[in-house]
Amino acid sequence: MSNQASPAPIVIGPNLGWPAFPKLKAKHRLTDPKHNAAARINVRRNVSDFRRKYDWTLYTPEALEIVEGHWDEITALLASFLPERLQQPSAAIRGINLGTFNGAFQKAWMRRGYSMYGVEIASVIDELHAYGCEGHQDNIFTLPKIADGTFDFGVLDRVICNEGFYSTKDPTSGVEAKGVPPFFKAIVRILKPGGSLIGILYGWYTRLVIEELASYGSLKLWPVGNEYHLGFQVDLAGPPSVLPDVGTVPFDSEYFRTTSRGHVFIPTNEIVEEISGVRKTRFFPTGGTPVAS
Ligand SMILES: C[S@@+](CC[C@H](N)C(=O)[O-])C[C@H]1O[C@@H](n2cnc3c(N)ncnc32)[C@H](O)[C@@H]1O
Image 1 (cartoon, rainbow, N blue to C red):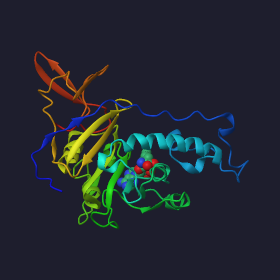
Image 2 (image 1 turned 60 degrees about the vertical axis):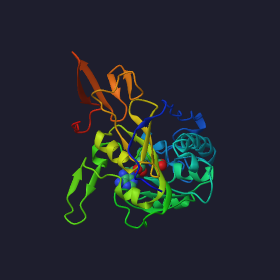
Image 3 (image 1 turned 90 degrees about the horizontal axis):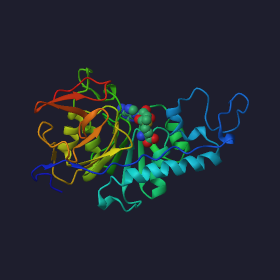
Image 4 (image 1 turned 90 degrees about the vertical axis):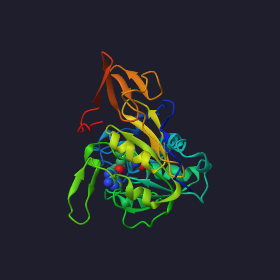
């Protein structure tokens, strides 16, 4: 596959909805493990609402079936980000779920018919294996145990969400650089040259993040669910992509959407104001250091 063709503009897909978490019945409600130690309860105490949405160990078998239906819906949405040639599931297509936790979405990809592997930084690999998934503990920024060109596609779904996640450690000096690319080099290394990286960025993505993704191949972006989520596909078989000029691209083009906060430049989450014909950019949302455009 050649990556030598001239760069093409980033493509913006339509706004996509994010599936709602299912409503569970009273019998699925929080149970105190002290009173019911043997049961696989729905939702443990002291577990954040957020983690409840992707931790299979928190559910009774009956509730798990309901929640797995929800994970299947999200995975169907993610699968729609794959290049067409990878959309027909097959055990011969090998994917890797990057930041897989204990397997909720990895298993949903397996139910779709793909061969899936997972890596996760947290110490939950026993739970991952107990759920019937393959994988090991690793850091998506380094992935030292995985050979080059191993996977047809990688899924990076809501793993990177604040500046702290965008950090790379220099292997020789041990110095950690936050918010400085490359962020995806190790991931791209373990994908086949004709493969693809898909996923959802949320909360904190910047021009540097998008430009790096665009440098690896054809980049397509989808606003997902709300103003903080950005679905993406990097097709490594395609030519690198370029960002349009935020200073001149029309506000009514597909690159902008207008919200209560103003004109949001979809590729980089910047809000752009125009006063007396002059455009000024401010970063949104806050929580990260603004990156000059
Ligand atoms: C919010 S969850 C998203 C759901 C998850 N992608 C899935 O498939 O179930 C993000 C996961 O990414 C993991 N993670 C964060 N940084 C990581 C890193 N540098 N390397 C590997 N995993 C990481 C977190 O520990 C967490 O389990």
